[in-house]
Image (cartoon, rainbow, N blue to C red):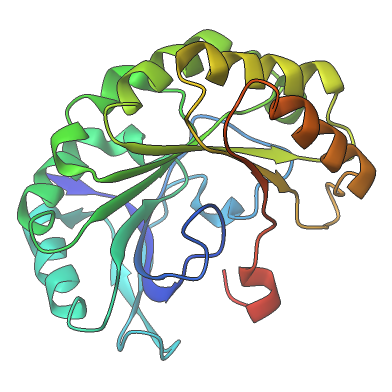
Length: 244
């Protein structure tokens, strides 16, 4: 089976609970959402080619053709794992759109390195086939104001399944985020398991979105901690390093 990629590269994890850890990133193309703050628009749709970092961490890339077969990609990834990577970070776009391709690929590589799945948490029906090969799940909760639609039920079912693994929830917040959206998101997580860590991630300033005021972030965190054990405010760090 073949899949469509955007890029493969080595860098530090730029967000969430594993921020700063060295990861080998596998970015797949295609997404089922169009969030106003998206920082990887090039990965929203498949393209004829993808870029491969020749040597981990050197930022020298070569162009490769899409689609790529699972076994061929596994050979590439396994060759790059000689560097000290803590995990293979599978991201996008939305990687679960290519769940069958990922299942084939991860059958080759998941025994060699922990797999960190970054997902928008809206496709629970596709998560099950990957759970045996995934170690860590970074699940977004997409607020209605960001993606233009309500996804609470999809997120609820995804939480139920993802809770079988090491899981944390990430919520990107902006200056336009509503208090009631945060409250509903926190209630959703608390209703599943109040021990699930939650990261409030203020959006990186850009032309399409601005972060909320610090006072609002503190207030959201304080309210959330009345129902959840671990709520952290963690911004993206890779823009500081000028790497995406």
